[in-house]
Every structure is written in C-alpha cells, then in structure tokens.
Amino acid sequence: MISEAEKELARQSLGFAREAGAQNARITLTQSTEDLIATLDGEIDKVTRCADRSLSIALFVDGRFGSFSTNKLEAGALSDFIFKAADTVRMLAPDEYRVLPAPERCCHDAATGFELDSYDSEYSGITAEIRRKRALDAAVFNNGATLPDKLKLVSEEGEYSDSEYNVYVIDSQGLECRHSETSFDYGVEVTVEDSKGNKYSDYWWTASAKQDKFDPSGCGMTAVRRAYAQFGSRPARSGRYNMVIGPEVSSRLVTPLLNALNAYSLQQGNSFLVGSLGRQLFTDNLTIMDEPWRKGETGSKLFDSEGVATSQCPIIAGGIVMRYFVNTYMSGKLGIQPTIEDAVRPRLCGFPEAGLDTEALMRMCGSGILVTDFNGGNCNPATGDFSYGISGQLFENGRIVRPVSEMLITGNFLTLWKHLLAAGDNYRSCATKLVGALAFSDVDFSG
Image 1 (cartoon, helix red, strand yellow):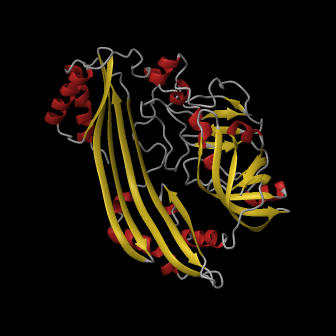
Image 2 (cartoon, helix red, strand yellow):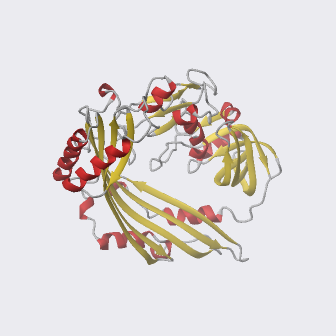
Image 3 (cartoon, one colour):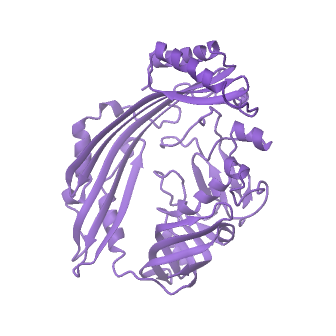
C-alpha cells in the first residue's frame, strides 16, 4: 500500500515543481507487487516476485510540457530530480495544448481507493505456502481429474499469480484521488495426445479481484476439453457462412472498434471511424456501454491517468457512434470536447433476449462455423479491412458436426458489424472487455 509518508512526499514534490518554476504539475505515485508460481507437469518450475514503486511527474513550464519518472523516493533526491526536469522542459518547443484538465472534469469521489471494492483486505496475509498450494492444486496432473477415453496428457504449463496495484494522483489545481485493486490469476496450457500419436494444445484462464471468488480448479480440464475438441480438424469448404464467436475470443472483434474511436488514431487519420460521431454506421441492435464502476472487478476505475472522472455511458448506442476517447491534449489539438482516454470496462449489450449463450446462437443460426480461437492475422486500422486465421467447429442444425482449422476470415469491420445477428450475455467477468458470444451472417471463410 502507499503510506502516508509517501503521500506527503508526493505533496512535497508539487512544492518542488512550483519552486522550479512550473506553473502546473501532476504527481502520480504508483506501487505494485506480483507473486507468481509457474508449474510444469504438476511440479513447481519457477517462482517470481516483482515489486515496483515509482513517482511520475508531468511538468507544465512556460507553455512547454515534459513527463518524467523516478523510483528514488527521498525528498532531497526528488527535489534535485524535479529541478533538473524543469530545466529540460524549458529546452522543448512550446505546445499550447498541453494543459491540466479542468478541475470540474476531475474525480472527487476516490478518497480512499477502496470505493469500487476491488481490493482484497486479506491480501497481505497470503503466504508462500498458500501460493504454492494453489498453484499445485490447480494442475490436472495433481487433482485426479478424469480425461476422455484414450487421451493422454502430454504436458501442462500453469501459472498462478496474485498482485496488488495502488495509485495516488494529485495536481496543482487541487486534484487528489486514490485507487487500489488486487488480482488473482491462473492460466494453463496443455498438450494432449490421442491413440494415434496426434498432439493438440490449448489454453484456459480465470481471474478475480477477490480470493473468495477465485476458483482455478477447472481451468486445466477446460483446456484439455478445448484441445480434445480439435482432434481430426481440417478446413471446411471456402465460402460464406454464418459465424458464431465464443465469449473467450469475441473481444478480438470489438477491440478494433474501440481503437478506431481513440483521438490519437482520429487525429493521425489512422482510423476507419474518422467523422463517425453521431452517425449510425452499424446495425441498430449494436450497443456498447462503458461501465467503469462495476464493483468487485479488477480494472474498474473512477478516474483515468489524468485524474478525469470516468462515467457510465454509451460508446455506441443502437448502431450510432456516441463517444470518442479524447484526453485533454487531443481535445485542444482536434478542437472537440474532451472525454476520457480510453474505454475502461466496455460491455456489449442491446439485445432484449436474456440468457443467450453460445449454444443458443448456434441454434439461432442453424448452420455455420463456431470460432473458438484466432491464430494470427491483422487489421488495417485506417480502412477496417481484416484477415484473421481461425479454428473452431462446423455446426449444422445448431449442433457441432466436426472441428475446423487452417481457415481465414476476411472482410471489413464496417460491413461485418452491419451483419451482427445477435449477442449473448455469457461474457466472462474476468476479461477486460465484457463481450459474450456473437453471431454474424454472411462472413467470408477460406481454407
């Protein structure tokens, strides 16, 4: 945790900045710790501990701007560092758009850092033995799980980690806010072999902000079942299919939309959504909300890195683009209203049917291809054209027929999202983006 003494150092640093001639400054003090235990075939393979504590300072000096960071958290060292940093800033070119955010836009509701209930109060009591037991107990090699018939578990690589992150932000206009969160994570990759010697690999993971909601016990067998589902896979015939995307990978198709709404991309002309604000570019059943105040979830935040308050608001509503992500600097450069830097907890919603999951979407589509993994590929951010390698399952009459692999999906994101048929509400709360299964029509597959 960030101590009161360290908070006082941050406040002293603001004073050093004023003494050095800065008209304004922002101080960000961060502290993070992570303990990781990696296992190989049910045995401890690696133990790692990472700890970091640093102070970053944004200086606004005579119409110029610079950002600096140090981990020497002692008053004398900080004073010397900040005075030298201010001298460096004076050598830079003026930039009229580099200013602090207006105080009324900033967060005033993050006094303790615990407002979003994403910090486990028992974190400090976790011992090395507890970590070791969690890592070993999660391994399929150790937990006595029964594998499908004639299936051999060749290898299993697991990683358990727990971490805490704390941040304290103040500026010369009176901003003061805190955020604290913990995270418990487990991921595992397995390789399995059938009776003919064919090998397949897959991965699964889980995470939670709280220990009492963290259960890694099923991850290994989920990875085994996903690997087993690939046995005998081959390409399907090239053509246009209905496509269902599983919730474990569906965010891959949402991320390019959010990136294209970032002001840096817009300003550089590197976005296929330039000039899209207020326009209906997608089907009217597409709605993406930003929900940054979701309690008890790692990643939820009351403020961004500038200290600007986040808000629960639509990013896209009924197919209409409602928000760009615009920090204070890009607001001045583009001459548009500022918002926040990026989406915090985007959730795709907008469908009236409740309880839709992957199987329901396959039944809705009748036949098509269920995509369960992406294997490389790329998207042109300026045009929205994409090409991704995929693997998954061919389905007919709503039921899986056989696995498919070594196929590509190609197209354009503007066109793809106009063909959205439905979205499930089976998103994974441990993911950064809350996107359930998705169903699209008329998608170009080639094998």
